[in-house]
Length: 455
Image 1 (cartoon, rainbow, N blue to C red):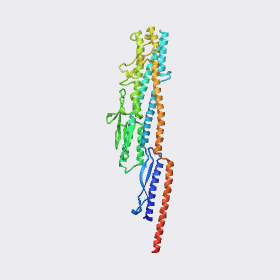
Image 2 (image 1 turned 120 degrees about the vertical axis):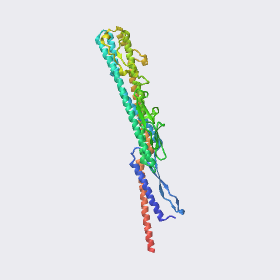
Image 3 (image 1 turned 90 degrees about the vertical axis):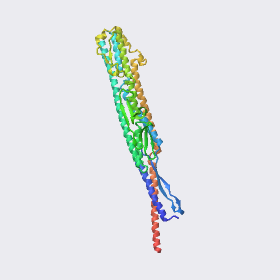
Image 4 (image 1 turned 90 degrees about the horizontal axis):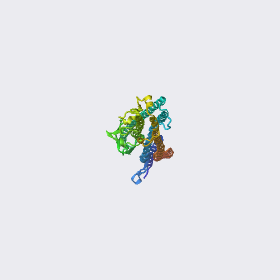
């Protein structure tokens, strides 16, 4: 049967258990704002109660359970990956769009209009040295505009390449941290809420750079794969990524893992965006080993069309010159023919200037049937449309991420109101047990005194 001593033992044990519960609750409150932290719950298990066997019941502390929801975590990481990609797309395309003047009043668009206007003025006064001098000046400005646009896009590609290498370095730094955390988890004697928070915070940071899958192991460690295929962290081993840049090649930026080219497997996140900009978006304008690039195509077609008219009137006479051996750098090498002079242009047949003026509205088969102004307008409009779409995706993904984070908070975040209620509840229980211990102690002392009185 139960005794005062067994009741005292149960009450004292309950004090220890309730103290553990309050410690866990206090830890939840303290870490409510800690990145990656999930609410912890101290479970309570009943002791056996069978007085005939001397089992007097009571309570004992069970496992500390984490409220972390792996589905919610992966949803947040997926949203982070999508936002990282769209944010980087918007930043990169903002730089690209700035190269093209969509108003048509300045830069290449404005100077191209000036060139055709000067062709028309020359047609009105075919023998005017002033008119032909204006043509040479305008042609020089157009050539310079092509060079500057090409250089600006090349600079953007160079900056993008540096970002690729920096991002790969950031990824390697984070995966090294994860491998170190996995080592700590393997040595830990049990669940470690602080270590678990650090791991999940690091995983969320990593997901901004590329799409990852993270699988929790029995010891609390995580295996991490890039794009679900490329090992980044397995147990306590880190697998580093490497990057290399070869401007003009196709692809120009490559990612390797263990010596194997995995560029095609990298998608999403900041790294996926940067690779797409370096290997696809920018070569679409300035070319690489597998494509000429729209800017080079336009420069070549303009030079060919103008020189073709001049050669038709005066064999050997040209206005533009470029390096024909390098199709993907024509915009960079386009210049005014050094031997072209006002005297040569003035001496050209009258029909030449009129034909040159007609090029303004002439549709070019090589440019898909567009005029030169239309083709440039298409380049500028495409850059602007791509930027607008990226900004729309960014806004959408910001909302998606916020929603995923809210759902995660509901599933595994710390509710200060609930923790306050739990603290009040177990403080009351603790105080009640304390009074019981005091009362039982007094009863025990009274019993001892009574025994001493009768002996």
